[in-house]
Image (tube, rainbow, N blue to C red; front, side):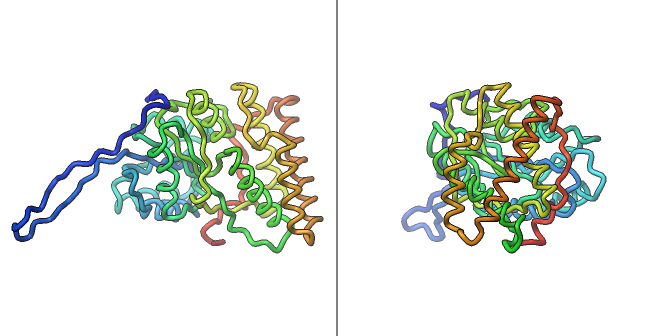
Amino acid sequence: MGEGPGRVPVIERTIAERGTTGRKGGIALEVERLPTAGIGIMAYNEGRNIRAILEALITQRTRCCRLSEIVVVASGCTDDTEAIVHSVARRDPRIRLLAQPRREGKARAINLYLRSSETDFRVLASADTLPADDAVEALIRPMVEDPTVGMTGGHVVPVNGDSRFIDHSVHMLWRLHHAIAQHHPKMGEMVAFRNVVNRIPDDSAVDEVSIEAEVQRQGFRLKYVPDAIVRNKGPETISDFLKQRRRIHAGHLAARGMTGYAPATMRLTRVGWVFLADALKRPGRLPWSLGTAALEATGRALGTYDHYVTGRSHAVWEIAVTTKDVEEHR
């Protein structure tokens, strides 16, 4: 831990067995000792999704690193999440379960994972996502190849339909995130980072932003990876949409107040220009785009109220239940 930008885990290659001319059956075999990567999944009552993401992770195709562990932190689960993890773990010894007796917030669960892991790189994946089979490779490779890159983030693609207003809002939100992140990296849903982050604030409601701030404080760069595809399911109701946007903006304000760091999407002029470009590409849906802007403004206003007026903490947040069926909507 604590490595600086000038250091990076080195890929070492040794010849374990070498064929020789004239020796029948001689085989040249190169064994690689690669940097290790571990994946942390924070789960609270994710029985509907946990098997799917574990299956997606154990079949990851990696060449630049060795995926040595998949850790599920189950926080006060009252469904069959833990039983499913145990079931899949019987087929793959890389999977292990850390169970918290009660739900204490995602940040505390992440800190438990960070304390338990010693891999060269860490990956955090939301339990209600489905990464493509090369997502881990795509996220880790930029850090293996460039010692100045300390954190990478994937490209979130919602599985929602696109026939209703709320579906349009979900897709528009992630299109704007993608457009901004290509020029001003902003992480979300699935991220990877070097083993330089020991912990994040226990009361953080925006774990990716807390990690972004710490990685950059140590002198590393962020890199957005559009090829690292991660599927998720956005809210299906306005109420759930506002829950998420309210909590995220309050978390952004709290992180900025604590560290002085603000994520790329907090700059309204930046978001505004990208929003305008996206809305003009779909003139037939301009009313829905304007409605999405109104929803986002409402979410930010509520988050501002929580942060500055009531001091409400979103560390243990209310679950947006309509976001929990990603596998069924693929």
